[in-house]
Length: 261
Ligand SMILES: NC(=O)c1ccc[n+]([C@@H]2O[C@H](COP(=O)([O-])OP(=O)(O)OC[C@H]3O[C@@H](n4cnc5c(N)ncnc54)[C@H](O)[C@@H]3O)[C@@H](O)[C@H]2O)c1
Image (cartoon, rainbow, N blue to C red; front, side, top):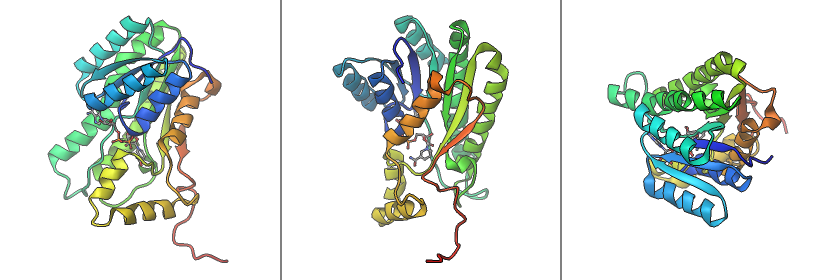
């Protein structure tokens, strides 16, 4: 699965899943635009890719600001001559119910996780149309298909991201644009480490997360990046509007059923 001659814009490319996607696609020949608000971490990824002979540009910005995203995508196109794929991995998690989530948290989560994805799509689609086709992969979550307690805004944003993905898939299929959503289970990233740090016993969070996946462990970012790569590549040429899980079997099991052996 090579990406030679392709340019891929990756939001949230500085850390976690997005970083793994940038590194994997660059290894496979893509020029990568690392779009992230964490400039220091993004520059580290860019330097790592270039030191391995790959091509990368860094754009430090907030994905909820369309003008900044558009400028970054325009600059990427000017630098590499095309924009062929978008991977949306920028996301944030906040905690709260319908009663305890305040307006600011709701806006923050929806602006990053949902508006950020829309902004990136709006900036990228005209270039993909011009080049005759390409791909969009939105990193959603198992929380797009089920829910946990106390994560209202995040769950809403991830469900809605599937709607965004399907709408784009329908509206731009005629242009050869394929859009798919990927729903990971728990992945070992800075986001998980932050969530675990809120617990007095962070290791217990890792242990509980590992135990709830039938495979008995959480994912490494590279395992998710491999699925992103497939959905971004022409190997998945008949896949669009779909929702893929990479969840170690998490959503397959019926919880609470006593073991019979
Ligand atoms: N880690 C998991 O267990 C898990 C599971 C399912 C889905 N996801 C989703 O996968 C995606 C990546 O998650 P991760 O675990 O790698 O998270 P992470 O926090 O490790 O990385 C997210 C990246 O997004 C960037 N970012 C956040 N807000 C931004 C903004 N406003 N503008 C630009 N960049 C911004 C961060 O700086 C960071 O580099 C997220 O959308 C997340 O919801 C993660």
